[in-house]
Length: 274
Image (cartoon, rainbow, N blue to C red; front, side, top):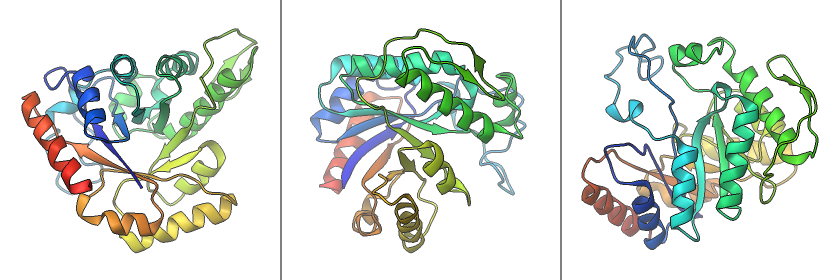
């Protein structure tokens, strides 16, 4: 089972290239970044979503770097680690732009990029992008389909409910078939993985026995081994995750203003995972 890092990379914390090199030097296999283009100041959507008593929103949500820009910089400063989003809020991107951004990072990194995709949770953030908060999943899936068309065809066109364009030219294409990881833990998430994804990116919200059941169901329905990456893994439960069929765990690097604190946490995580 591979071990990676996921973090909210911010303008006040450790610098992107320094973090990427530190992750690589400590033997981790990958580095994934989160995404929020902005946080609406109204704060009407509660955090966590659905909580009876919403908590204050952590500062890092409104200070994240654009993940594609940061990952391109990290790619230039590293050689081995995989790079990805966990998750990109795909429905809030224009798909023509997103296809170029993701393919560019993949080519510049030598084929090390993976697109983790999710619908998001902040209704006001979606609305500011012109996304109907009642239908982010439908838009996300159509955007993924449109992006794949642009990645794989020399003269793609797409005509859907949310995306509509006649034949276009758009390069670069990804360095290899670029994996899309579908985030989520809902009842129908496996349907989305099977219809639009190359892998599953769940949160550690299930008991391990139920996680094993869902992974088994996913692979039986697919008739193949579908990779599973677990976001925010507990280092004390690695044996259970491996037995459940998880292929890769992402340890969450906490929000640190002092880069030295971030490096110390990386050291602790590397020791726990060894």
